[in-house]
Image 1 (cartoon, rainbow, N blue to C red):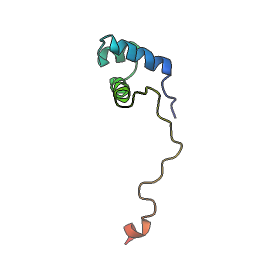
Image 2: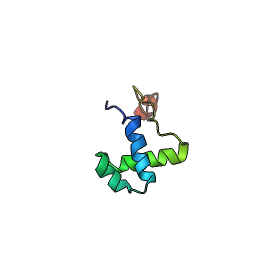
Image 3: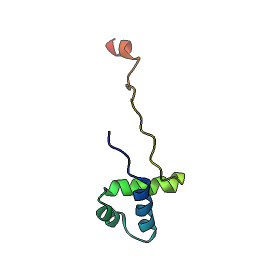
Image 4: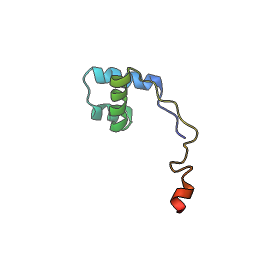
Length: 72
């Protein structure tokens, strides 16, 4: 699994965003996707945090425990 972007990069991207650069310009400057820049700005706007979310090790199966119902 890939590692999250560093806090330093996140802070630099948001500092330049606050200075008026567009998401497209930020993505080109820092070699990240525009979607990531938009998600980072949205995360700060909604939660006030720019830290990455904790990564999960295992995602449970969506239909776990429903095997009997599906077989019927």
